[in-house]
Image 1 (tube, chains in turn cyan, red):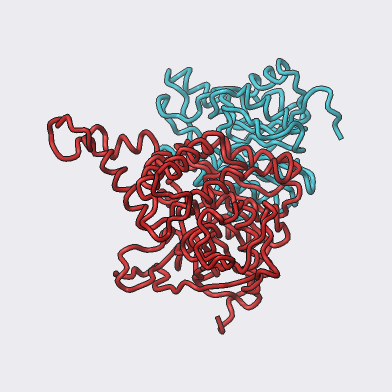
Image 2 (cartoon, each protein chain N blue to C red; image 1 turned 180 degrees about the horizontal axis):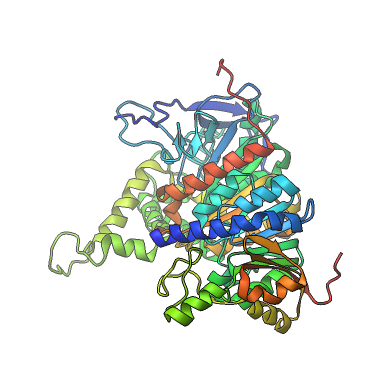
Length: 217
Length: 389
């Protein structure tokens, strides 16, 4: 129970950092599906700021009540089981923010997301961040940081990936990276010099991806 | 009975009669019925323009008495008293809650035990077969009579969920939101099968007498058997096992007696007998038939096309251990609603209590229904209640 709460707080802290950038990416009035939406705080924000038509998906029905109270449609489901109830290309944007690292089948989840949406927004903690590397190199212990406060045996982050891992994954999955934002020293950066050292310096990577062949408007 | 602080307290059932032999309610079967009587209860008070009305639809063996007590000496409260009242999911401080007996039932609304105006005797099996649509059509007359143009919400579990869905399709302009709990877009084959067993138990009981038994005790054994089978379908393997295990009823050694050896046997027997004290066998037949007939696809076409006509916002709730109306059946509705871009929320509540969970596990249900109702006020605000009440 306490671990759950810690996870919720942790994810909230991280994801709120991303709100501004996500709100900047998503166009006015877009159709948005938020996977792992929790209490739909981000969607509520996007509905208020960008007038999106949104729907939230989460495994935790109690937290979804928060979204319902905002008048948002929500769907309780386990991302690892796929999203068969959602039709192909039903959404403009599918968001997977700070959720990729906690799912069992990231490949299924990303494939489903790219089936349902024209664009995917994927944000995750970069385990290639220098301080985490230093922790494992010098301390010889599984990485921990203020943003990743868990022990190896109770961490919800069962998928340990780096920004470079995700770029390679996109190539293998035939996904095109439309934009990459890296959180380096508390600032979102998207230009080449930053991207070159992002794998070492970024806390968080946030990618906008689309299937190769999809027209980018 | 001690009235708890969050109770609606003492309530008075009311009557409403509509239609006549000249101007009858035309049923889905084509037969006509009139006059039609409905017994209903209300909790809370209407606001000035009557936009805060919530219609509660009951399940197979339920009735209009959903909350509060009838008499200060009542030991039992209404069947959904834990959900309806001040500060509860259906907050009577904000909403005007209405609950009516279905036609075909035996709690005052016109049903097989009512007097047939043509003969002066109870209808018995001369009562016309009814559908969920007919029940809803009768409710619509009541809602009109109460001066409600658009219901803020229609809610029901099990057969009540059928009615809520039917409302959204039959009268789309008159429903702002729908909460469908532990139901589906049709009764499953398995559901029809269990209903058939129940009806078989009743109609093969010699005391059924072709359905005209009202001057005798009637088919109480058949009805008890029907209830015993049905009761099992409302529970789950795990809940039965937790509650009774293989415990023996009275001895700690096997008695090798034909009659009740195990605790679960006595329990079912008791449930069966108690049911015959409050329910009419013919009503059981007619209402289970109405459930069997319920099939949105047959009436309104493929689900996606059917729900394209609905304008309400929906909350669909299933329970994880419900095997009479499994989660997959709720999801079928949700999928169609998502495909037609309707405003739909779906929650699958984790519970060991099977189909009956919607009457028992109400914490999570309360959380999601009150949140959904709050959210529904964003698209249709409810004006403050009038002081007149």
